[in-house]
Image (tube, rainbow, N blue to C red; front, top):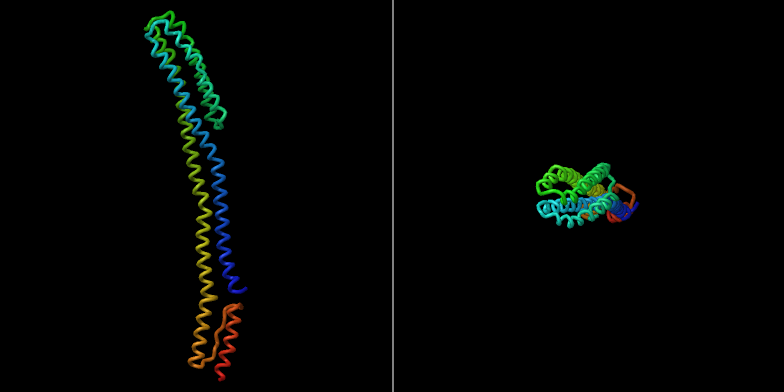
Length: 254
């Protein structure tokens, strides 16, 4: 194999290794982005929806709490609580994206707690009509608030779970990023090693033979010494060396 072919082959090998590593890294990053990126988006949306569930629950309870000490006519304004469909709409929207077993269990708990909460909330209308402030406060403290607290706890647990899942999925992306970098790191290290080897072979098969040829020619011209340089391989330098050997032999005969 000729010298130019050897050098070209060495650089082609280095380029191929780097190209292959780039393809592997791009493929790995794309796979991680597709598999985990969508999940993270869903986690963020579920956190927002869970926060909206909590907000709706708090608004309804605080609205009712503010009316405990108001006259009985104020009960007419409570229709906004019973007609509020936001909680059910938000929860239904979140359930369509749940895939984790813990999410499904918490959703069922929220549904049962919400049903109990609404059932107790229905007691407010007759209670407001027939009871005074003390009875309303007692009902709120002993009946509604414990159910509300249980519902609120389940919603907060769902938010905490979604935040935990978001953290875990974010960590997966970070791990996937480092994992996708490994082929590139290995390729760069391999390429550096190949470049050192290529440099070594260039030195052995090109630079040192040229130095030997130069020294041999110099000794022949200055000291009439016999030109006895031998090449390590059969390539263009070997052909050049044979031609120089003939010229030096003819020079010594003059």
